[in-house]
Image (cartoon, rainbow, N blue to C red; front, side, top):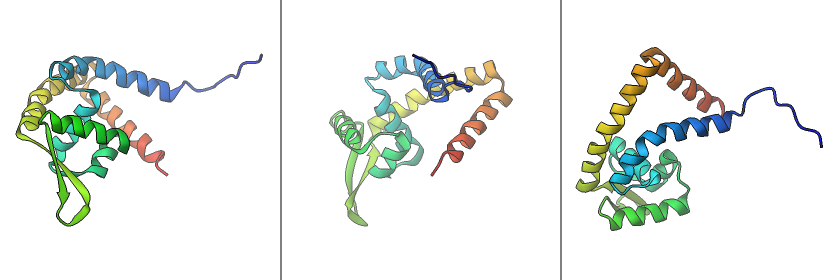
Length: 144
C-alpha cells in the first residue's frame, strides 16, 4: 500500500486543535453555568446583537437548523432565551436573551475576556491582531 505524501500541514485539523485548545480554558466556566458550547455560542450572538432571527443565530453560531431547534428549546425551558414570531414576517422567529440569559453573558464575558487578555499578553498584541486578520482573510478567501 502506497502512502500519499502531503506537502502542507493539515490545516482543518490544526484549526480544530486550536479551537479545542482555546475552548479548554472556556469550557469549565460554561459547565459551571450549565451551558454547552452551542448554548454559549447562541448567547454570545444574542449578547452581541440583541434580538436576532433564528436563521442569523444559526449562521453566526455555526449550528445547523435541526440542532438549533433543540438547543433553543432547552434554552427556553431553562429561561435563558425567549422566542416570538417576527411581527414583520410571521414565518420567521426572533430569539432574544432573557434577563437571566443576559446576566449569564455578562458573568461569562468577564472570564472569557480575561482569557483573551492572557492570550494577548502571551502572544503579544500584534501577533494576536495578526492571527485575527489572517483568520478573517482565510474565511473571506474560502467563501463561495
